[in-house]
Image (cartoon, rainbow, N blue to C red; front, top):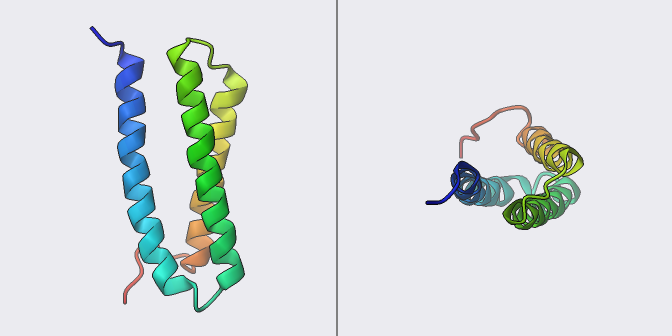
Length: 95
């Protein structure tokens, strides 16, 4: 029987799909307004996904340190903040 932690990582991966789709929609609208910040957000988002996958691999070995957890959480918050800044503070952009 799989552990509860395994389910949490699968939920996180579903969250990636939501973040990727919302990031794509934001990129199509915001790139013309601020290309540098859009590219920064894309790089941060790819870095976040990489960190989360590395952390997930460590979780399979039961060696996730609190440092990794805080790093992944901090990167997630940073990507979200840059996204809100790029969307000019509106969580939902209207086309």
